[in-house]
Length: 303
Image (cartoon, rainbow, N blue to C red):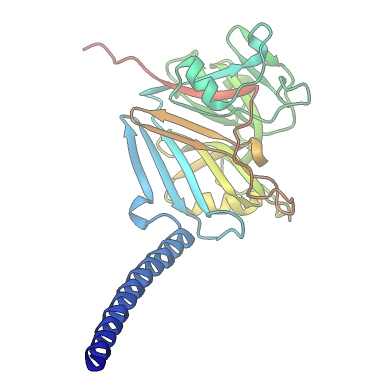
């Protein structure tokens, strides 16, 4: 009887050890997967998701890892490449709407049927007026031409010019070109007509939205949540496979936004606060904007 009890005890002990071992293996497996997930999260998006992703005919979303890592955020540069032969740019202003108030890029998209929406420019404290020249057919948000060197021009009045152009006042006659387009949006130059980075280095860093054009006359909607000085960001954009030729700054900080809605896919990129702020990299809400540039698909050309 005593021997039987001893054998039983040994048997039960062995079973217990097996169960503990099995539990340990399960726990180790879970720990390994958690560690792997953390490593992947730390490393960012898998390489196969980087590069250009076609969204629809005439529109692609590019996701690129910056060659200069940021100490805040994921160091990803997101660029929506738009073929203006397939998509039409539109300037939208709350000042053109009776009793209009700023709304988020997603709301602009939903209300106006837009495929993508980005900041048009920085705005004044009245939350309606741009900081420099902004006009379209039938509405002038502000007529003042500031010292800034670049003007985004579209809604062409002359079929011999390109659908969209970033006019550089340093090397082009604005008095001539302003007669060629109905919509003009002025902002701060980032890349000059000679391809030069025109921003001096500075210690301040923030999220950025920008609009550019490439060597094939595609339009680039650019959004970078990670914090960079504008000087560094321009060098990053020039180093990436964008073929970027000109670019202008449209907003910085948490207001910098890009929204995209295509069939079965939606992307909403928002900005973060300036480096040094206690809220840096915490911003996750979309800000209402008074002035935006959106795109909508052009109707197919008749056969």
